[in-house]
Amino acid sequence: MSEEPDFCPMGDRFRGFLPVVVDVETGGFNPKTDALLQIAAVLLRMDQNGDLHRDRTLSFHVQPFEGAHMDPKSLEVTGINPWHPLRIAVPEQEALQGIFREVRQEVKRNRCTRAILVGHNAGFDLAFVNATVERAQIKRNPFHPFSNLDTVTLSAMAYGQTVLARAAREAGLAWDNAEAHSATYDAEKTADIFCDVMNRWNRHTAAETETMDKA
Image (tube, rainbow, N blue to C red; front, top):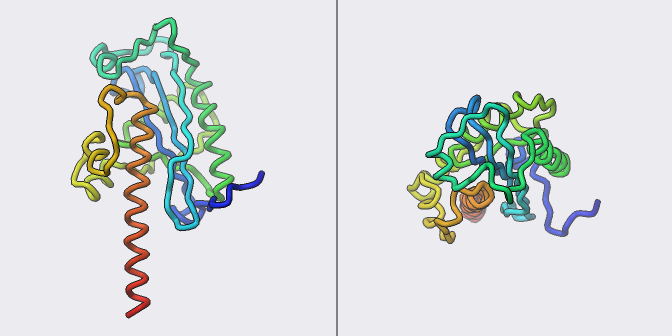
């Protein structure tokens, strides 16, 4: 498969890890008992200058597993009606396998050894992914089981903010409260923040190197 002219593999950028931005919307806070209702994963690209860019988004509405708990307060926040007749949802196994298949291809293409989950409060998203993997008996999970990259910490460092909406605004990104709490929207904004922080640091270190070379 031919590569786009500016494509650069990320194998050496994050110690062999491929960052993939993930956001989940759920029926509560307990990954063992509460339903996974929506999942989105954003794939990234690195250009020849070492800058990261949002590439494409994978997303699925997910059917609650049998016996899943769904807190009405959580559903009110997300605005998800799990039983809406126009909600095209798939079983957990189908959703995760669809995303994992694409992620494994990206890991190989970028000459990486494994994917690493990037998220805003990433531990929450990773816990739901891991619980769903176990429940659906999925054997090939491309993500590291416990390591993650958290944009809460990165946003606190770069912008002095920890809330996703505030961090996005500080980064100069548009934010629409009406779209928030959709896995796709939140994942894409998280990806934009992650790329912005990484790219700022990339340019900072490049400028420092140039200054030292001239000294």
